[in-house]
Length: 466
Image 1 (cartoon, rainbow, N blue to C red):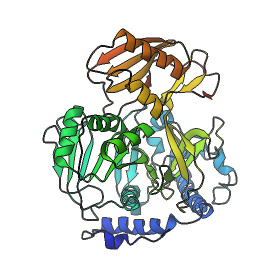
Image 2 (cartoon, one colour; image 1 turned 60 degrees about the horizontal axis):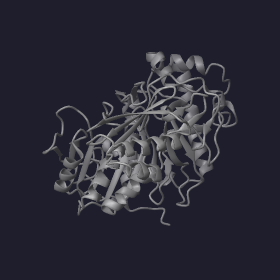
Image 3 (cartoon, rainbow, N blue to C red; image 1 turned 30 degrees about the horizontal axis):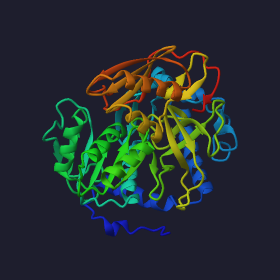
Image 4 (tube, rainbow, N blue to C red; image 1 turned 120 degrees about the vertical axis):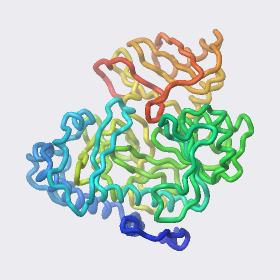
């Protein structure tokens, strides 16, 4: 295994600005850091964390209160137990705290401030203020992702992810001179198309642009790839596809391979945090971007999970001193993994399970995952000409099955799907149907397979196996 990459020779640099030089310096340091032993990586994270907590307690009103009881904030006391005394920060708490989460003395060398707002896919949009320094790490992780997956930046990139009104509208879409945040390196052109384009038109546009690389949201890929497979639509120049923003399932990976014989690469990000984990170059699990975040997976008692256990994702931003999110609970669940055979010491997340609202609560309080595995999806899609599906928990004993389909269901199809729902969710729900040509997405173009549209009852048990 080669631990040194000659990426500067492989990639052509643009003339460097001061900002570009800073990003490139970060990438070089990260190239060495990723091969450190896990223990040394963790120790370095706690050094960064001790500095951040000291700054937060002195300059941020909210943390002056929540960190007041912690006597010793240093790189030794934190991993020895003090870190577990830092309270978890919920999305609701971020909204309630407001400007009390802002630093009164953000370091001048960290540059200007930039606000960002989450898309609200969890139902609770969050505003976060970031520094230019934090954004440099965001750009450096983008470059790392391209390097890890050995992308030819001179080729073209096609993107379907914007839902902005009147932007990148079919048939023309929009054209761009280069890929975007990798402007420190020379790249080929990029093309973009609005997510509200019908799937057949997306396929036609993709063939017409014939990109080397294609990026979109998983819910689009889940429909576009099977459509192209079933209609024999190829994209001759395509080398790789890329998804982000939602759960990437085995069904999506299989569908892309069947349609175009290329791989899918995924990443774990959020707008308020940035990059949290990138897919390993050699495996389908994820490496935590430890230079920028401390990512924990906690059980219901706020204790760290072990590899193979599923828990709540709690993240701390290490580089944003203007408005750091410390032990911030995203609303996702994930499964930790063992150290990676690739040799990188960066922590491993085996899989991302999904948002907190993706848990179905039965009338007796038992919780069940709603995530459909690849066999489940194939079974459901074979029952009728379904393009999209969504399950909505609309009343304690009622599931509404919403289908993107061009016609009404037959009685036989309805009965099959009803049986599927009972089996998958382990309860004899009353099943209602709502059919439409297209199911609505969130304002950010995302889509949830399961939504809960009623207050959950008090939960009596943990997640049940389905």
